[in-house]
Image 1 (cartoon, rainbow, N blue to C red):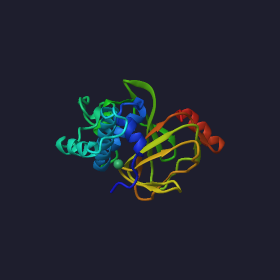
Image 2: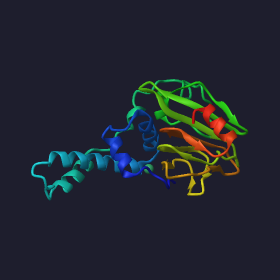
Image 3: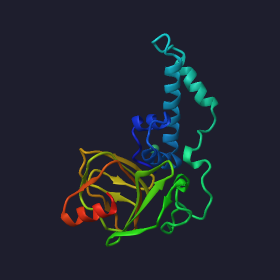
Image 4: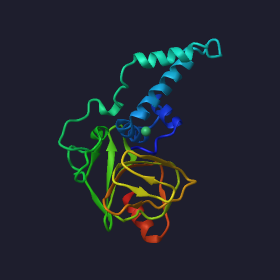
Length: 227
Ligand SMILES: [Zn+2]
């Protein structure tokens, strides 16, 4: 059961191809697992097309909405997320198998386009892996793998941070997030994600600019990791 979804403006930007490769990948992964958002994205895409088609006259024709819905109904199932098509074959993924997932989870198809050097230590019970995309090697993409009961240091943000939960659960004081959930934060949010006891948590994260960790050790580790 997915409780947290991308906002409509992000879905619309994704549908219009206006997102940079990093955030687009987060959306691709979310859409792969969320039928509700695939429908919503398709609706927004169709409405956007209808608004352009009906730009003359400026008011939307009364039947435009019905035509839009009919077009959606006639369109069959929504298309697969862009990066899921033509994925590089290989055992596991991303990086053609360089990253072993925890038991009981599989990597989303959309991540197969990524490359990675493998898991690296970032603290007791915490590992990370940088992901690079051929289309944008500096995309600011990370996988975080955090053990049960562990927490990422409290931090704020200099820009947008997008998180897609792939496995396990965490709570950051704002809400609880589980498998398939999506979160977007910006420079107005300070939080400390704490992984639930009982299982590790794996998240895909996009960090637009740097995180601002509270505490010298956390800031040092954050700098080393490239957060
Ligand atoms: Zn969704």
